[in-house]
Image 1 (cartoon, one colour):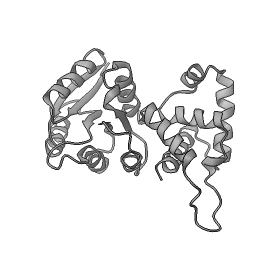
Image 2 (cartoon, one colour; image 1 turned 30 degrees about the horizontal axis):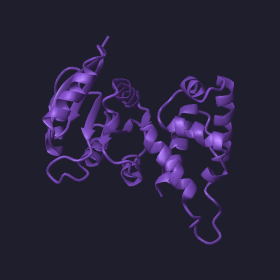
Image 3 (cartoon, helix red, strand yellow; image 1 turned 30 degrees about the vertical axis):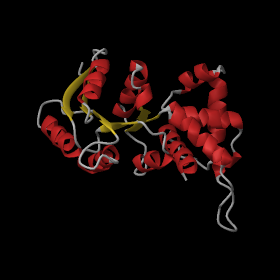
Length: 236
């Protein structure tokens, strides 16, 4: 069975080697290329796609040459157009809602945001890679928590006559569940993390969908839409 093929990009050779080594701990993951710059990364992805198997996921630093600013986000944006089926996990030192909002602007499918402080946990890195490889999304739990706190502390600056964001109508438990959904967890994993029953999680998620006006028949579409609403509310 073919495993997940990954391209790793970071301008630090030490970090590249470290990420490659961590991913190498899992037999189902294969690192098929590395790069140290934005253009180098895009070139490696093009080269890998000329080979059998192509690539499934890019794991990239958020800042690389040439500008050392937001090249990881730029790579995700360009790959959305050139290789839309390739997932991207952006590694960042910054729990910055603006970066996250931009990464998810074209949709959270196949996009992940992981803090570098948590890369040393091979389980979290692998979870992020697997989530985006399957077309899902992944948001570092610390970043998700920051977004929730910022949203809670944010003054109501909605235009006159506009109602409050539907996110503000969620209960504290529903916010916790939605935060977990944003990190790519399944209902079972959410139940385990929050020490509640699977049925309770389903009830909370259905309530979230109703409050956000998400009535699509496909659960996966509603989960993606809920994550988008969550990210947009927290990152605004």
